[in-house]
Image (cartoon, rainbow, N blue to C red; front, side, top):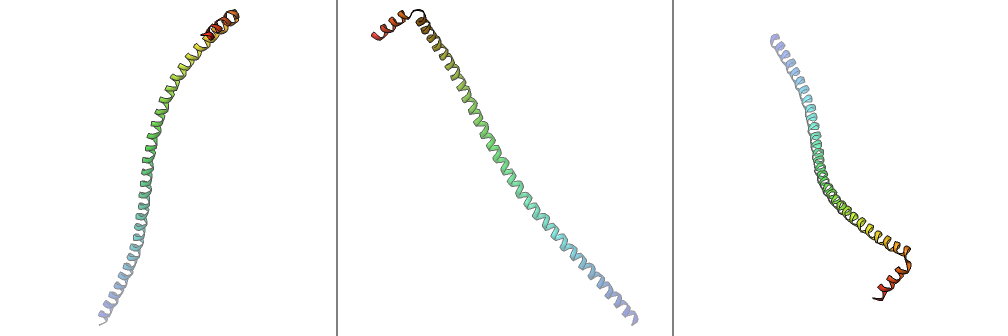
Length: 123
């Protein structure tokens, strides 16, 4: 009988030890579950931020394309203005030469210049 009591005591101590280990395992499992949940939540946040960043990059590419198109148009306009400016310079130089010729005529022979003006006015 003593032998049975000893076995029962050992059995009870073993059960208690197993329960304690099981309780410890359950506590660790709960902590591990909380850590995994936190990591998963953090990953979801990171994924959302990455998606937003990808959308921003896409928008920036669109903006960059528009800026390049606008710049191309500005270059074309500048080339057109340059051509117009060159034509304006040519015309202005020609007009100044004509004016210089008329001024020279006036300086050398004002009577002749007045006579030509009167002829032009009488037409």
